Image 1: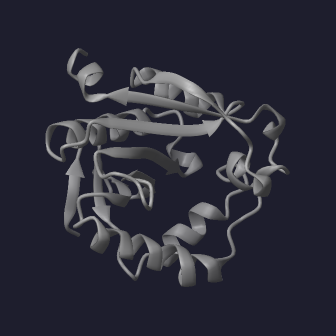
Image 2: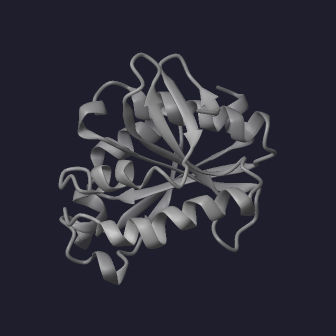
Amino acid sequence: METYLETERLALRRFTADDADLLIELDSDPAVMRYLSGSIPTAPELIRERDLPNILAGYEKWGGDLGLFAAHEKDGGAFIGWFLLRPEPAGPRHEVELGYRLRQAAWGKGYATEGSRALLDKAFMELGVCMVWAATMSVNHGSRNIMEKLEMTLAGTLPTPPDMEMVEGSEFGGVRYEIAKEQWEQQ
């Protein structure tokens, strides 16, 4: 396993073509998918035929520095989920999205904050990123708390996409948080 990034407790690596089952298991948990699809699991064939090929293509597109990264506990190697650091498909490389999706067993252990903080460091110190943003449902307080721990600033509200109207709390829309390199350097 080639490590992309290490923290005190986590090892992040690029996904491989053999990782479909990890993604299928993660996306089959209704609690994990609560604010993403209204608890509806992602169909395994979509993960195999669409999602995983798109993840792998992202490494090619961004030179392996940006994309979606599998996260494992360093102690024991358990897969805990993934972290994302990448630009919008047609967006500038110096503005990237931060994201995470973790298994329930990894919730409440500080992993999302730890992995995200390491990715922010890498983005600003090594990758020439100027601004990082993250978005979530307004009612997803767990994710919002992480963004606030990272000292990201609430930048605005977002409309609910039409395909997410069945998600609990969708009537409240979403929120976008941001942090600029200058803010990060002052922490």
